[in-house]
Length: 632
Image 1 (tube, rainbow, N blue to C red):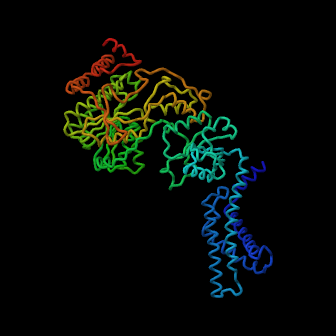
Image 2 (cartoon, rainbow, N blue to C red):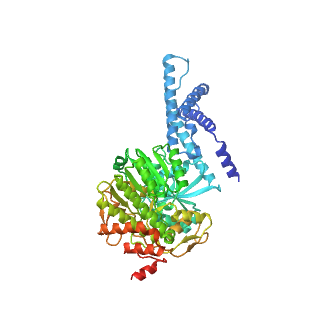
Image 3 (tube, helix red, strand yellow):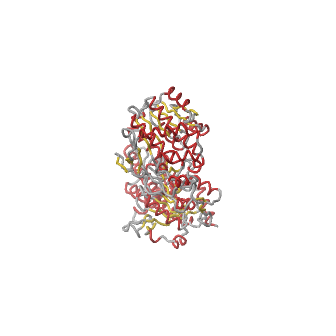
């Protein structure tokens, strides 16, 4: 209790003025020591002369400390920078003393006032040593006392390189939390067993459950720049199993003014653990292609459409026309852009199914490029509503694509999905039919270039699994997974939208762009990691419930259909799907027929027409499986 009281009192009341007083006191003591050393460790000198010189020394010291500000540092967080500041202040003190004494000797301003140069030099050396040494002694003293505090965080830093050392300094400087760095972890054999500022470097294999319990480790902070996702995943999984909270140091580019603060060290996110490197697109051609152009974005209020709109707003577009039938989300996007000071856009509540309304928008604003992100995407809902899936995903796409040709649009970019590949559900089939229609138009269009982008699930999108798991964790669980072996490809929304913008500059038209999304990820494993990253345990705190595959749902998603292959583009992660040969004239006639007559048919007849159009469409876990048996 006495230690805690002393420590907290010291932390609260040890102000910079107290530090200044202590520093001035040490300067006086050092001045006495300088005389004592100069006269052969004896008191054989004029003591009254020394006393007369003290006010001058104190005055010069006060000026030096005020100029440098060395007294303003937090003593218990003393580091190399603080020691250097003390060195500068001490050097300035010695320099000013020498200058003042020399100046007085030349111009006789104060008679009989003189400090020997040997005293000044000895005082300078002693003062520098004493000021720096006392700071580190005080810091060590504070650390010994702080080990008794309940609020202390016992931390291991994974990575003993430059980034790890910087993280170590940042934690020591932190004013809000008390960190005790128990050790570093590094797999570099030349570093293991050595120490950094008295802190030992451990072999990762030695960090066991016994080690964690012995040292009461609360956190492991991963401080490795440009760490590969698979390594990050392995490290995180290990410490999750040990019941330790895992945090990560952000990339150097996100440090504030090139310096790391402790509050920038964040918890691991599930996005960090997807075992895939992010796709980075930096293409100046995008800027050139959209500069001073009128761009139309359909589905602008959705997850993908809104991010496309945000990224477009960073370029010098003449006007961005945002259309969506969802009024409230569109209003939210409108207000977000206004708050950012963006004015070159217009938000219009409109439905891609309403050809008349969309045609009026084309005539009024005369867009030059179209990014088509409007779609129904939820597999189980569309399995119950084939009519709506066709009306939005097929007819809506057809309306926009036809109007693009009629209005001589330069480029039409469609957002598709991996569920369109060998579809097993109505939603995927409707998107595949939309892909085929775009392919048909690209063959006959000479002015408008048509492009399709195809990718997997996006993290954080409306209705995706990550937000669902977060809500279920907040509600105390259980987390629901449809099948223990189900896997999905994942990417972030900004990545997906960068790809869409990139596709708007590539190719001659008619291409389907896909890209290397890394490995598919087991949803069950994501669920377990999210539980642990929330500070809970599976299954003790939150369980995972297997609910069974939903209607139309696949165990595994694919990026390429049967008969498709890929060719490379200039970006190593982006490829073009080499699609199978089609009789485009026949396909287009059949899609036109479906679009004209879909409102006259029931669900079973609609799906039957879709299956006739797409031989690869085989229903899974759906009421429409019977149609596949009949066709066989």
